[in-house]
Length: 261
Image (tube, rainbow, N blue to C red):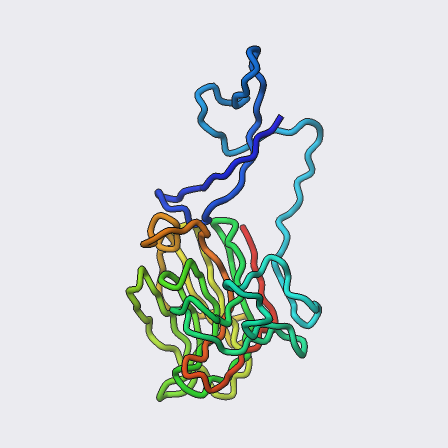
């Protein structure tokens, strides 16, 4: 017999992975009640047992090559409205996102994201993007809500195309140093390396040599307990394009890779 229930896996008291479902072994007592099989004091275990032989599958790669698919995988979600109504679609062999509102906004974001489902994760995207000014931004996000996220993004300033990390922590905004992107570079690769409470940010121009930017972030800030207000989603990993000025820009994502360790 098994019992399914809601739970969380707190890390230092912070539920980075949000609300999850779990299974526990149960047994019937002689007087017709159920109790946990492996625990007489009611404390849950972090495992359960099944009868017979169990085959362990390797964790699947979350690689999505948009030249080989015609529909957005069900793992990926948009905010409040369907992806298509917010300018997110597969077109010409890429995931094309028409620039939406700022990530500060509650509405019409050009954002596509999936749940983070393990404490140790790499999230990588290959992006083609030509911003024309500082109000054009595109990149990858570790997103809780419009007040809490890490945004590894490309934009343009007075020196040309640049990459940096923007952190929003309960509405408090901070920016890392900027890294110049050569104008002739057509595809940039952006990566998060999440290891429990730490997140590191990287970029590459060839998908081989990776360079750090933005220091080390605290993933405990992307959690149910840290945010101000209600919530239970936990960390979402995604890609986005922002067109804050509203004069039209698009970002193309050739592929996205989500990998658990």
